Length: 329
Ligand code: SF4
Image: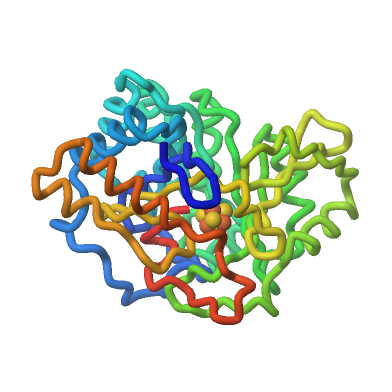
């Protein structure tokens, strides 16, 4: 098992497949100039599948989430999903994507064994989308979402970040649209993981702000802690159900005590937490011919050193060097 000194057991593995993206969201990346990981440093498809096999076979991982950057940009994605689905202990598999290209790939991903998708979409307004992402791709995302739903990659979850002065008035509209289209909407508080290090607590839209805005139009009934388990989203039934809305309040209502996650970057580093400032190199172990047992031992040791939480409230908090685009969500 991947257990830490606080007794938490990681069963959820997030695997970043690339640090590249075809959008340039202002809260994530600068318009240009971000240094990409060098190709030889990226794990190969074989290395990724091997690490996932070790994780599910020897380390108790039950769920695998593919992330990026934008994971649909990874040429071998469908093959990786197919090979993971064929493992003896098949994990549940999902994908966090910006939705661009999903229209083309949803059926192939489902046939390969993907269970569901999370699609990031912050606005229903094409002009605001262009301001937020610096790209004109709003329609592509909507088509990707519809394709995922049609392919049965459900529940299709939509992740939205609200930014002050840009889309912070859209929470009720986004929820009405999600209910109408049968998507499960989750708002995510903006976190200090942007490459530009421009995040400011004073400027962020909080879970409290989001809920107040939603309650101007909807009746929200909280789900119990039992339904939530270790999920990062607190959820509410919308107007009595069956639709739900979630809020992931990493900053104002952290959920680190129930954290069950371990992360693998596209260049083969284990991160015990989104905000970890230290990493453990599994790629070096793989490339020096370490056996599965040795790789598992290094991974376990890394998780043993996992900190209690994000440290966001600590005055000595330091934003990790590696930006969100190279960590994965
Ligand atoms: S901040 Fe770190 S410890 Fe807390 S929930 Fe996120 S990954 Fe887990």
